[in-house]
Amino acid sequence: MPRSLAASPPVDHPTGPDLPMVQARAVRKAFGDNEVLKGIDLTVDPGQVVSLLGPSGSGKSTFLRCINHLESIDAGEISVNGSLVGYRRQGGKKHELRPAEVAAARRDVGMVFQSFNLFPHLTAVQNVMEAPIYVKRQNRDAAKAHALELLARVGLADKTAAYPAHLSGGQQQRVAIARALAMEPRLMLFDEPTSALDPELVGEVLDVIKTLAADGMTMIVVTHEIGFAREVCDRVVFMDGGVIVEQGTPADVLTNPQHARTKSFLSKVL
Image (cartoon, rainbow, N blue to C red; front, top):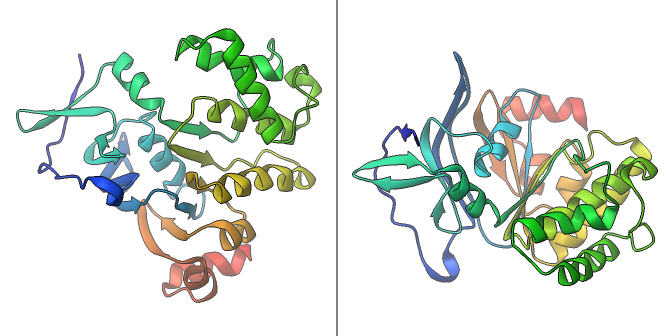
């Protein structure tokens, strides 16, 4: 049975062009006695690119997984494009949706992980086709045509028939990005997409993300690539200890941080 979530006051979501793509309010998440998120408030508008920076264990990846309901939250609420993530409100309480309902809602949110998670027995184009065919019930020919377009978009037009074992790490990650885009999401989440790559392969993946930003895709990117955050992102959010310590434009946070903890972190990574 769907479980009840700690109740919070109903929220009147805005409508029209001012509707946030992501709205997180007082989000809390614990694993046993370890409270990982301690009241996160964050708004991301359509078309914005937001980077989440912070040390390991600060809650960045957990928060990203909560946005996609890969982790359920313990209190607060998250909405994507005006709809509650993973829950429905009934009788003054929020109740977790059934798995099929969660899966349907998740179609609007693409996610790319540190590990590529490609199907090893499928070619690049087959990996990209898989979800549209089996989740969206798309015609196979149409799914293949779209997959070929997406692989060309990420610079892999010549690798469509290659299996993951025959692709470099950077190429596999670009297939993973194309696979997420195949579902035509409104929002893309990236969880340290370059951390598993050799240094010389990082640029080719970041270039794809930069192109998506230029095309107007709304994105939240957990990254340690400070140069990318400075160049591409509209906003930088620094997290530590399960809270947002500081946020602002890249120029404000990266060049002129106000909080001592932000200054200490940047002094070690810049």
